[in-house]
Image 1 (cartoon, rainbow, N blue to C red):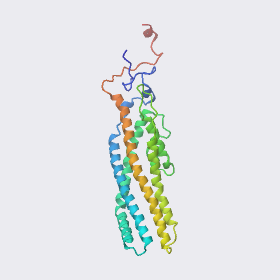
Image 2 (cartoon, helix red, strand yellow):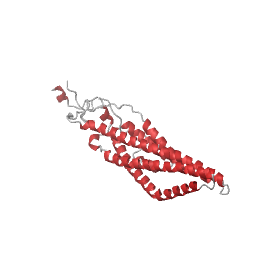
Image 3 (cartoon, rainbow, N blue to C red):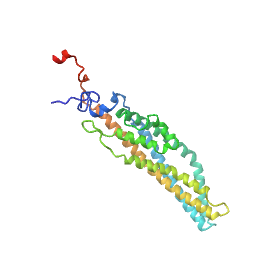
Image 4 (cartoon, helix red, strand yellow):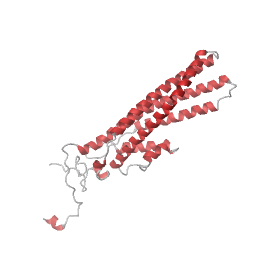
Length: 279
């Protein structure tokens, strides 16, 4: 017996009287038509995330050298090498600040553009499966305080909504540990610079030179941790972007599989005329 296929995706067997499979029953009407691939946006975001990760790795190396330079000066106040290294690092930071800020802004914009498409597709898959409205797909990233956990909730909801389904269309439970690991490292990398600045501001006075340098060294050590978290966050973000993009494309590809032939829509049970039912 040839199974009757879903009238929406044309790929999975009908479950129930509505002519739809389980996945399409909870999805928006005509979701295969409205789905838009996030692949191009994902490629752009991944390239910029890789560049940001490389920049963070470079800054990490510079911070490690800065810790060493301060250590040389603390060991010997007349150490020329330590002062020269500090001057070189300060000049490098000044020269790259503008490029770093530009790359950060461009990467943020590309990521939000990609995520806006991801959220729109996830709304098609499971319209009622999100804790926050679609407007937060952009606003959550730039709103103080709630920006520390709203974006995580948004990505997790999209991750769950975009997960694979079984042959009958039931959504499978997927772990979102990758999203949580990425968000943890990213928020940690945001807090580290603030801690480092606080250490420098609350350090001893200028007259106590050695103690002031100790505070600077401690702040640089915190920066090392922060930039290490930035590198990890960039790597994990690439994995999140690519995995979530692939999940959505795979989910939509089922509805476009060659040879899938949906049957005509069926009338709900009980709506057929009596004469038609008798005949």
